[in-house]
Image (cartoon, rainbow, N blue to C red):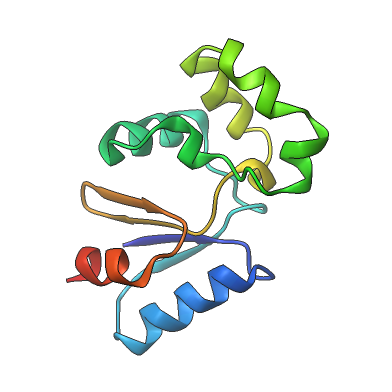
Length: 116
């Protein structure tokens, strides 16, 4: 499993504690120091079945300061992947990838299902 997090994020800390409490085996990746590439984001988005908006950190300061709420509807999917790849602070976190399953954000019941 791959776990992408921003260590200072309280939701990420909860998710990490959850994984640790379940004895889950995962690779930990700092989402800002090692930001996902556009290719990774495209692959994860396609595997997830989620709307691309679920990959954006819509409550983040960067999202708001860039006025993305208004700009995203006019952007192509490829442009959205490229934008997300520019800064880990734009990406919704945490992200958990297990095989072909991808989750954004932390909802314990969903995570329970994916870690098996």
